Each structure stands twice: as structure tokens, then as C-alpha cells.
Image (tube, rainbow, N blue to C red; front, side, top):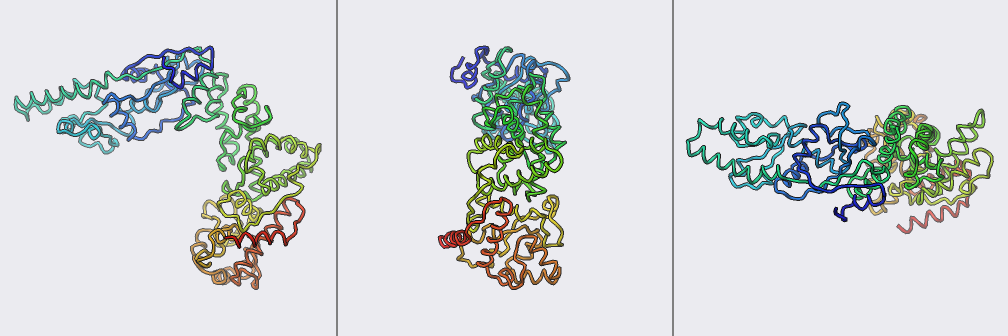
Length: 581
């Protein structure tokens, strides 16, 4: 046993973990895959290696270079749902003797390369080796649609190109090649070809047949906790297994198909996919209910059968309902404008109080939750320590929603920053400021119709400059040009037409096309100054920023309920920040 192996170190965690370490021929492992005696646990990620990576591994094996260690589990199918390797024979109900816990990508690569399955075919260009080319060049990979002449034994014989799918059958392939070329060669040439092919067998074929992987095999009695810990240890570099993956593994042993549960709720609650909500968030909501906080370690301590399964659908539904409220009532029309994704945990965990209400109380509680969302957002409460914020906020928020507690401190007062400093680099406040103007679905600049999530996607509507950068002075600080006050949602066609024109010019064009009343309605819907004597029509950028900041401040006060601060203080800070650019 090698004490330096990470899985050996991890296995020591459990007193019920036993394992053996030995070496197994690669040919034996591939044969086990073919015979369905070696498979994968269902929660393993899919095969992701590219053809070039497989070719590198084949070359390493041919040169007898080390290629890592394989971790197997005997009797693993009794604990985890098994599935076959990519493109390998389907299990069709057969229970494999071993499951590969580590080494999936390498074993799948070699299985594909030496079986001839998949979209790519691998060859050893023996002709190039004989001419003195390096093995790095002689191992070739081609898409199956481009194999052409090498698809037949005649073409293979002509160029001496060995399909790796016939490497284990090299002796017969060699005889077939000599037979195909027999009539074109003299007796001496046949002897020389046979000698060369025998040398290739000695130097490059036999090393593959003799190649061995160090294999550590866990006993069937290995605890699931130990297996999950081993996975975490193995995946500290590269692509990690997620917490969800680990709990899928635990769930299988408890008779819970967690992956199937996740697929079901994503069909039922479409906003989870629309906003790309990871299933880990559902687990965190459950952990907040059951254990009081959403930390990773807490989630890993959840019992899949007793804790997760009973609450899974409800947690997913409350995440969906929270997103629906944000999208329809708070202007978060797409995932881009969600200020703090981590706030979703608090919203969903507190949604139980809204779900429990009836009649007018439902609207009252939703109003409170919306107000808390805006207050916490503009207070930047979830900028750091999000898990701790959720742990602390959920109990107080639920009491307040239910009328059993006082309003959270964040709802009572807040400091308004100057938005002349907020650009896309300050993503949360930038998104929140744009969402404020999206609350009432403003009209688009192209045809004057309300913006919706679907129209934003189909019409390529994005946030663009109101005063084009090219129109503003070249020596003006980039942050001042790009600040959120100079941004609104504009469709691609309109933005191209605006180009570098001044507002007065492009607004005049719009006025001609749409009419003054429609244009004014569009501008007001975007919280832009619509007065023809105002700063937008006069191309007055500084006063435009002042107007827009005052308008934004008024909207923030409206949605948060915070007391109005001294305007002079706010704008003094604003002017000071601009002066420092």
C-alpha cells in the first residue's frame, strides 16, 4: 500500500474501509469493460476528454510511461446505480463486479481507442515509424468520416497503418497485410517487411499488452461516508464532483433517485433553468430549514431520505416563486439583472410564510419581502459572508413576515452611494439600478412595445449607452462614461442606428418615426428625461447624470421605504467622486 495515495489517506477516515493495492494489465481492465464486469457509478460525470487527449494517453501507454492510478470498488453496484462506460456494451441489467471510482476518463479513452467505437478512430502509422518518425507523430486520430483509404485492409496494407482496434489482433493483421502485398514484393522484400513488422510488435505493440495500471480496490463494506470523502480528496484539482453529485451517491444507497427528483422539478419550475439555478441551491434551502444554515459542511450532513427528499420539491418551488416575484414585480427580467444570486436562499427559505398565508395577507407579506429584497440589495448586505447572512436573516425575516417580530434593521435606514461610481464592474448595484427601471416593463425604442424576458432574448436587447461613448469627450474618464446612469436597455437595431450620434440627433430621428408622444412615453418608461428642454435633448451630459441620479434615488427610497437623505450630501459625494477621476 502506498501511504502517499490520496484515497489511502481518505480511506483511513473510516474504520470500516478496507482496500487492496496491486497492478492490473490494461488489457484485463478493457476486457472487464467489454464483459460488463467493470462499470461506472451513475453519478459520475460524462466522458469529456477530447481526441487529442486520448491520443496523448495512447502514446504514453505505448512508451510505458506512468499514467496515474485507478480506484475501483468491489461490489459497488450494491450501493450505487451502475452504468456502462461511454459507447461500451450496455449493462442490460447485469450487475458489474467492480465500479471505477477514479480513472473514468483514462479507461474510457483507452476503451474507445482500442475498440474502434465512437466518432474518432485511432491508428499507429507503422510506415512512418519505419521511416524514422517519432511515436508522437505516428499515433494518429481521424474522424470516422475522414478515414477513407485506411478503412480497408488494402489501404492499411499500402500505408502500413494499423487501426488500434486491431492492436490486440496484431498477428492476424500482420499476416493479412503481407498477403495483400504478397504479389507486389520480391522474396527479399517480403522477408524485410516481415522483419520490420516484427520489430514494431516488439517495440510498440507488446508494451501495450504488457502495460499495467496501479489499481487500488476498495472492499464492498466501505462506508458511503468514506467513499464520498475519497471523492472529495481525489477531486481537489481538476473538475470537482459537486456536493449534489456526492449526495446523489448517498441517495442511491437510501433508495432516493436525487437526480431524477432534480429533473422533475426543473420541468415543473421552468425559472430554475431560465436563471441557471444549480441544484446545490435547493440543497442549501433545505439545509437552512433543517439545520439552520446553508454552509457546505451542513449540506453534506443532510440525510437524503429523511431531510432532503421530503423537502426537495417545496424548496425548488419556493426558489421558483421567489424568482417569479423578482421577474414580474422587481424588474429582474433575466439572470443578468439578478444583483445577488445568494439572496435567493434567504428569499426561498422565508417563502414558507407567504405560502402559509391566505387572502389579503398574501399580498401584505409579498410586499414586505419585496421591500426587504430592495433594502438588502442597496445596502449591499450580501456582498460578503452570504451564508452567514442567510443564517441570520431567515429567522428574523420569517417572524416579520408572519407579524410576530419587528422589521429587520436593514429595512429601517440605508446609505445611498453615488451612482456615478457604479459601472458594470460593480455588478450587483449596477444590475439593481437597471432592474428598478425594468419594474414596469419599459417600452422598447424600436416599436414602442413593453420589454419582456422573451423579447429581451429574441430581439437582442441589452443595456447600452444613452450618451454614446464616441460622442462624449475623449478625455472624460471611462468610468464616468460607462456608469449605470448612462445606461438603459436598447435593442440591437436601434443601438446600431444610434452609433456615435448625439442624443439630440438620434432622438430627432425617433421623433420623426414614432411621433413626439410615443417617444416621450418611451423615455419616461426608461426613467429618462423626456422634456425637450431637458438635458437629454440638449446634449448636456453633466446635468443628465444629475437628473438621472435624483430620479434613481427617488426610486430607491420608494422601494426601500428608507427615510430621504439630505440631497446636498448625496450630490456633494457625487461631485467629489467625479472630481477624483
